[in-house]
Image 1 (cartoon, helix red, strand yellow):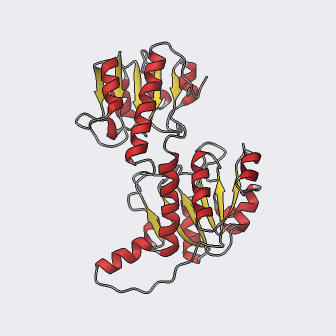
Image 2 (cartoon, one colour):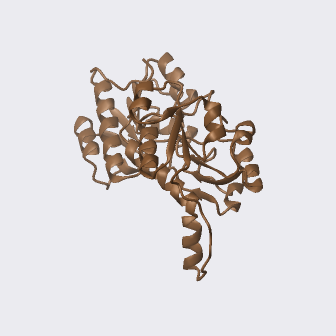
Image 3 (cartoon, helix red, strand yellow):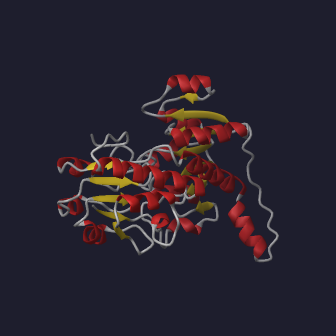
Length: 317
């Protein structure tokens, strides 16, 4: 069995128990030596003779899938799979798996870290102080503010818990809402428009698909309160970045905390004109614990499929 392994944390030279397990399953491994997600053409070249793939944020398009006659499984190292053409994989009988929930604490904590960073301008003040400045900047307190969460899955629940720990009122929208969970945990289950209208801080935890692309655009931002803080640690493309830029100029948005961008890396993004924009490099799941958990489950999923065993986390059954 030939397997392509693309995530940077699973490359040779980095001890990883999951990688050792994979090596015990097959010693015919190909690695991504670039240190970054592979674009379509590179992915096609690496994957064309493989039986399986442990995939990071690589572009696995229909063109790639069609050129890989031996491929049986694409095991996503992470929960999202918007960069995999899942429908085409299903047509070809290729199973796509993911690792839901295992990075929830990591992404949720980073999301709340972005909220704090924007609310108090922590990165900007750190930079100015290091340069010898002694800036006086007035932020906002989170206690008593309303936190709106779009997508109350495993990650959204972590953010809700953090917000409540800071004395915030939490409201949430999810198309598949667990109403009992909301009642038990003092979270207001609200329509989408109500979250846009009433929240002081909005944190996004949704997949990227046709329904969520530019879900936060000009019309939605216009409904928000003056000085709203917007956080995206899910997928770039959910926010219309041009609309967000204009809203930062007018003050409609007080700031942005972004761990995901439409173009990654976001070279020369005009959003970086504003010190109220805090950016991280899609690193929400990059904690020791989450890395170990994602590696372990992605390898477990791949081995299960290639061994003809049942796999719980197939997304295109």
